Image (cartoon, rainbow, N blue to C red; front, side):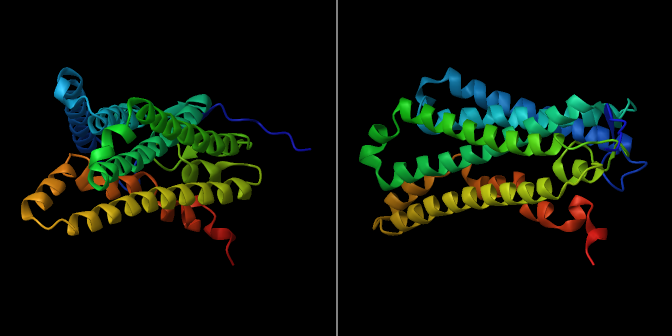
Length: 273
């Protein structure tokens, strides 16, 4: 059995091909991060302070605003620190925590978009039964299911990644710890983790996208069946909440299967003959 000197920290190399642009990137990302937190905070405060917004749609939208604050907070603070000249090092446990919460929050948010699409489907296709179907208990149950899916997804990926031995290079060629950047650093066989990671991320992405598309196809068909222009306009306005215009894009934004399936993304291109 080989003896390994285990790593206790990783070095984040940052955004590829941006050397010399640290100050500009720091200002840009600080600005974006600040207004992301500010905008979503205002949305959340508006929802909880107005009794007219205490409906299932705005319940999900309020949760989404929380996730939109937490999700970038997994990676942005550390990125801003090393862009400002601080140490780019991250501890072994910190790297594992970053990977776990990135996938937990990202996949849960994706599931939440699927739930919101279902909510709009019920509102338009079954308007008279909407409050009966989307009862508070049902809404909470859907959120719990989304959270459990995210926990399972993140736990599988994190456990597979950090059960491997890391003993050689500690330089992560990215601005945060994610599978394609961390797995190539393993000293032991990482093929199983690569395969499961690709399948897990790709399958979840396709399932979420499929569920969103099914809901909105039914919504589209229901709207086209409405005869009056006023009725169609009202139905469209029901779907014009802030989450709808970017629903499909945001669902896919976290899960980019191509980034996980290209051999180069895993640092294993040299193994292909």
